[in-house]
Picture 1 (cartoon, rainbow, N blue to C red):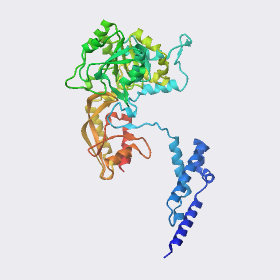
Picture 2 (cartoon, one colour; picture 1 turned 180 degrees about the horizontal axis):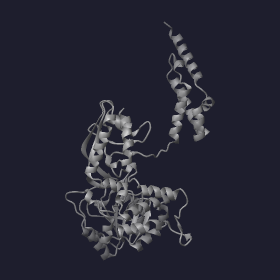
Picture 3 (tube, rainbow, N blue to C red; picture 1 turned 30 degrees about the horizontal axis):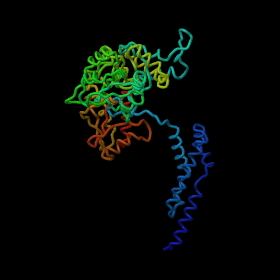
Picture 4 (cartoon, helix red, strand yellow; picture 1 turned 180 degrees about the vertical axis):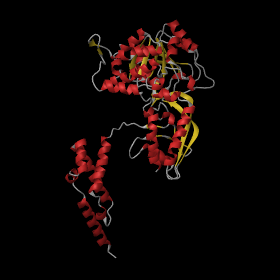
Length: 479
């Protein structure tokens, strides 16, 4: 039996031998795969990654000395593979496509409304070269980027004029800053909502320079509360649609027509923040959400809403209403800081053109919402049947009743009936299977949900052309 000192010396010798077997950076750079990598990623990036990998190997050897270490030294092909994998990871975009199998149509974390084919094609056509973004082709002179979307927006909602900024929070901010900076804006306490990620209406009002004048209580606000609060410092009445929550039970707020009459009597503009931006009646699908056009028919002066929620377009904030007020808002110097770029203009124009043609099913979010329970069931059952024979032993797929939701801060407490695909594996827990779908070794990540120790897939939010990819991803995750 070797003495402790001999064993220690043997470990040191093995460790030294292992360190000597680690190749140098120059040797690695001459490997065929890494040479090709340099051509694509650049020498500086590859060298930096190679040094990171080698430093990691040296640290592992130093941290865990053991006899026989030279026999387990990492071979050059293995190091080469590590370098290639890390560089490929660096080259891959951080923003990537995923398959949304959650059943949340306007999933804020997944980019809300997916754009239509026409919108993406219009982006590609106009963004891949120069465009007439701010050039009047008829006059041969400088134009305004507003012309590509504003008339369309106004036409779709029945307003006199409209402008577009980068999101609805910006729209509300710009309206308040223009109309009520240094003065008061009256709003019901029951409408002081938080619109996501900690952004709150009172905070936006404070930053805009408008002074918040709260009226009523959380659950009940009467028209008389607004009337008593009006002073010579009041510049607007603000009505905020509760698009991301509901107050039920002992609750009350004035009808829109009542607020319109009050604003006319006192000559104070009425501004309505609709939030989700519904342009078409969705009641046939079981969704009750105010349509923007109805607000203008009732006499509202200015309406704001999002472009990437129920409208089904890109992220944008729409400001529409009476021409004189919209023009005042447009002249605000902050409008330039909040305006949208050419990609948003292109996507919004194409989306609004679909509304003009009545082609609502061209807009993915609307097609998903309007999809019948029968169609969702048919797709789910066909998906299960097509995949059943390709599953590993023991894995099961079954259909079960459930529901989809709109999401994105829209239509709270309103669900869409759905047929879900429940996935079970004897080899992977639901948590593990969800992670394997979300973090595949290759291919498109799949975002799902877990209930009752089953991974659930909702095909309502899976585009038809994604089903084959989803099936392949599921088969791989179950293996």
